[in-house]
Length: 131
Image (tube, rainbow, N blue to C red; front, side, top):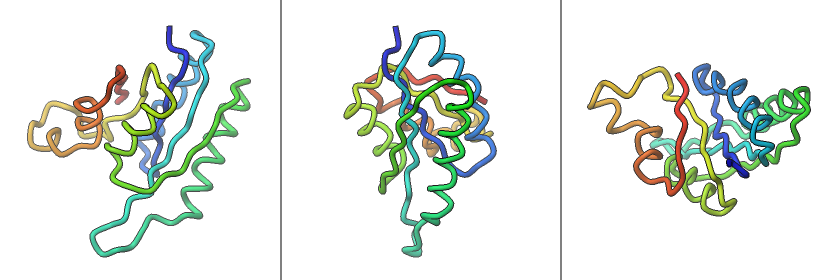
């Protein structure tokens, strides 16, 4: 059912919570997995550390490899929600699995500005949100 799963990951603890669920979904559906990290330019012009992003992607890839899952890793620069949706379209993702970063989707003000909410509204494929 889900041939291609996109797993956007970032440096927050909450973002890593969905990693086991993602592994389970990939195994269940025998899916192809793409792990994405989006490097965002901050308002002061400073970008997230490329070293941290590379380490994060390598750790995630190793976690999945230890579960017997081969994963492709991608690092992109841009606005997270738009970049996640663009990559999902590029790889023909059938599912995006991501976290709600601990904010939940209840608080309307926080939800309206959250990357997760934007992805839910922009994505052409289903989005599974972990908490």
